[in-house]
Image (cartoon, rainbow, N blue to C red; front, side, top):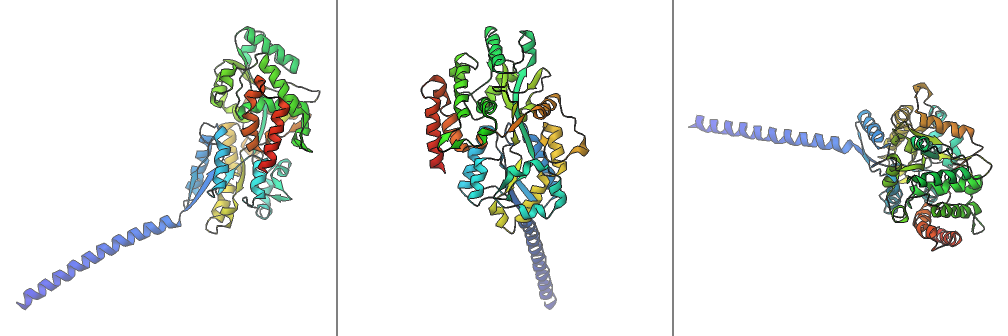
Length: 429
């Protein structure tokens, strides 16, 4: 009997030992996995290289490479493309859900975020790493400085010009326009052959032609758009020129160009339905056709002016991430990787991006369009920043771009449109 009782007790002891061991082991594993997940930092990143943007794929690969080399970091990419980006990033800052690291071109919007204390001062960080700082070209630092402090990392150099379907020019024996008179001749020639002369739409990206006309007329004056409550005159003159082009049939019909999306406008040119389009260096990657050429925007004055500056590949750290001790070092790692020679060379190879970071060791063979862009820059008398960088971008899009159809159709004069824009700008500030 005693032996039976002892056997039962022994069995129960073994049973509970197994149960305890299994339970403890299971919880230990869960705890271990849980700790591992806790130790992994999540960083959010955002810029305009998302969606249909030509750099979206390369960005995804760069972020994946970064995660592979930094297994304790997860990067959530919230990038969006084209006309959707600016409202999205401004909303994220307004709601307190700002990205940890982000890209944004220079101009009024980043200046507003800096003034609001939402962007980290990177001056000490950059100066503490001379090798890193020396990898950047010196000419662009002034575009990311505010009150003597450096806030951004100037990576992506951009330029704008006139893209042409050279095969259409050759087929219809049209001379490539070098000035406004030549542009008018080309417009009339393509109209006679039922070809849309210039792919244009009334969206933010569509305003590049307007900006280039103003740039050609005004040069560096455009970088100070409002003086004593009045807009710089070339902005008015450029609108009048746009209205003249519209009246002569340079653009798609009003029922189309007033409402079409930017991808539709691009497709008009890419599918040979339009002979010309005014676009930026980021458009080059979309132009696989050997018959597409890039030329300087037709001169409206005696000076050879070119829109030139920094694009969405200008990188910052939010003040919120900087003040978060659990994120700051990881955010710095991501910033340094995005601005590394390796990442910049990858963007150059895959997307034709011109880098302000020295990647000469990689011997990148840029295609003919990029080479043309570099030649245009070298041949320019004056390099002008994109005009919409010097005016409130919110007002630019919500007033100027919005009212462009009314201005073109004569419902509002260029002078009254700009008065409305200046009033909105004052209220916005």
